[in-house]
Image: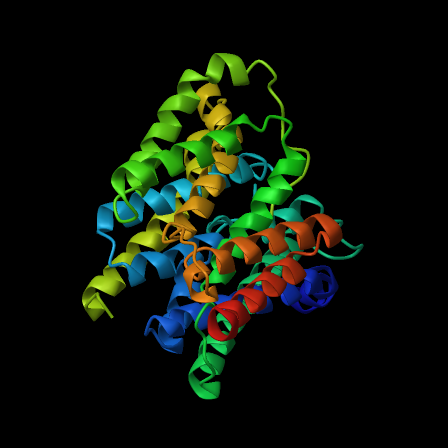
Length: 236
Length: 116
């Protein structure tokens, strides 16, 4: 059953293979650059398994952030997953113990593949979904370990590699700009954080900015919620 | 490494648990029917773009504006702003995540290592 499911799922996951190898390698390189080797990369990718979350994780490890900040920031950057789960409630029904893994591995890319998945004939849909989730997870682990080992072995000057994180967030922002009609949340996030940076300085800006953003968005709900729009497509 | 090994492991465990929690919450709360509160759906819609914008500013937080007759005076801000602009242009042009991310990062590395 699983042989057929994995064989059928592999072609559908090839785009994620390319993406995860590349973005995972950049993660491994960044992690290596702050002094954590491939064993750390392996376990982070195995247990956390989140693209932008782990990029932020490099930053949090590098700056020795307090556990409370780590928890809050991880929660906020992954908040969008709440929405993903809501649309997978039906799909994962009846998957038994595999459902736990499906929930754990619901990244942006796996979500995108699952929501658009067309299960081939004579393949069990649940086995097919499971195969997609497992393959994506393997690509991510492989990419991050490869990046980390490459960073250690090649020994090239990795100064500036951390810009990959900035670039990833900019790419997500550009996609979101296209996807969402209301640009106020993005502009607000930008403006509030700049103010926080100017007032509080680079070391203690993030949490206050985050709280201010959530509070202001709640105040603006009357205005922003009227349009009740749904994103037209998934982000990265 | 500013953290001890134990502290780093603790941070990773927290990240793993919280990430899993964000993915599991809808299933814990709404798997037996019931509709999510409107305010959660609202935040789920407006928070992601605001948070990403916040993280971009955060990534660029060490930018220092300086001007002067020699190139080094611009080193505090020109590399990241040039590379960021290139990422935006590349992405609007080709809509290829990998091209945009790696094009921008390699340019940035060249700028900080060899130019400024």
